[in-house]
View 1: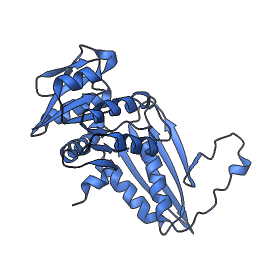
View 2: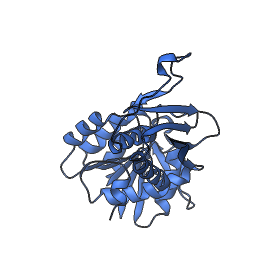
View 3: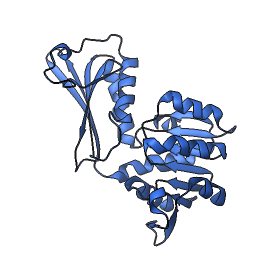
Length: 261
């Protein structure tokens, strides 16, 4: 049995995580933490509920989890991870906004044998989208990314877009120009330039998580698109990560690293 603490349990993703982990075999949600919702009962989807605590350190000590799943906020996640890793608790992190340098520093300071796993996107289809985009970039180096998320997302560009840009940059053998930047009539009209890839971020109510990677070539275009139309799309990846981290150590970034045989 894998014992799990869910940090950010009262949020939209946190509530889905509680339900998904409760439904999974050999996983037990032993604690829920959300500072703004102390005492709130989070339904587990199986007719029961878990009560939120406000203080993570207290909850870690009281519940002795094997794994902490964190879907909180960029301002809170670093302190959360430091507490859990210092306590010898494996971490599965869906909160984006921390730099890779910060993640590496956290992993280095963690207790021996503890795994810090971070995924910018837990949807299996999003992992495949990034894989296909990297393959396409080898042959069609002209590419831009459009990412679309709900209006409450705290960071832009998204972690998925940043990782996609990194994968594209590593795959293509030349960097074509990004025309139009020198003649922008409004600053930012051509998007943010990340690893020499233009990224455009859209934030609107009604969206969940969506991304297009648009390639252009002589007389043709190729668009690779992934849509998460419901937050349950992320749950198989979260469950997979919880099962895998208990037998791993160190820093692992990206769900694809857990999907390979």
